[in-house]
Image (cartoon, helix red, strand yellow):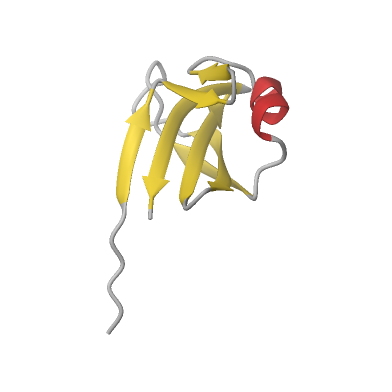
Length: 87
């Protein structure tokens, strides 16, 4: 049996070299700093400021870096969430 353990850490910013990506930055800025995502997934979710009975489209971009996975959630063309998955 194979066991898999991972820790997820939510962040408000992400250092990329000498630059910083923060919540609210544009999707274009994400690509400028991190390049094209390894995986790009479209889903629907409840987002603050939208009535509970309405789902909105969000994209989750994944980047594999040095034994960890960076997950960037894009809503309305802006960074809505940044998570780092440590493997």
